[in-house]
Image (tube, rainbow, N blue to C red; front, side, top):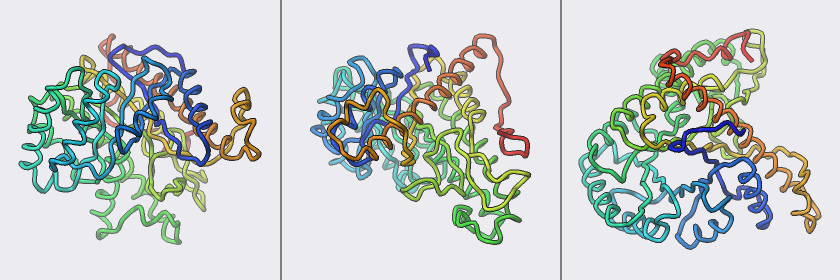
Length: 371
């Protein structure tokens, strides 16, 4: 957990109250993030909301990235004005802002490129302005996402947020649909009677999708800009999320099956710790001279962990269930932070030695003898 990383690499976690309760939950998060030395990615709809969240910032020097609302659209002037409002108020206090992409980015690329130029011009006028990262979020063709940034190589304040599992799940759907008459692989998570015979094709699509993420990293790397990553795992068959999505899992999660497949009752997620290492290595090797930031965007699973030394924070609570759920989620983030920092350390070591691992992700955990 204390593995050192280079100063141009920041490690952050999703920092918010997704579990019901008072601000004791945020104090708990603050303490756990402080202990881990982890920066915070905060969701805020308005500057006032972000100001309130900043009171719980893990430390004065911890990196903070704000995730802007989904309805912000780069192509719309009112959204750009709201982005400038965030940037102006928090200049020097936050390092970045994350903005979702939109389907129109692929449909009307020239319009979005023009909007990006206007946005960059406004941001450049702000002293100590945070960077604006446009996130791969809505499932457009990854080539269109990369093409957008290739069209704005000279814009210093705007770069990419590569969400590895969003890209991976989209590609798994595309690969599987191509050979199965357009069927959505994620529709199979109900695990009907056909699933057992389809497992080889599903796993092939998952592995191909994970490998395709490296292509996006390589393509964005050629622009030599700071890049932000959203890191979480996923699998088309996952039903773990209470929000109904197939991703936002930890990297050592296992997907339960109703039958044995290759001698196991589970399958491993798209990346796993080995795949995470390959993504991080590719990023560090290709973008190592630029600033990199990695947010663990893992959602709570609503399991429980004893509060331990944090129990006094909740002495006024009669029912500690939600506090223990929050504590479990924070523990998952801390555990995955250890995996991430280990991956960064190994990537930096290999980079200094002039070594690299395989250019493709072949996680052994997808086979019968995997863990």
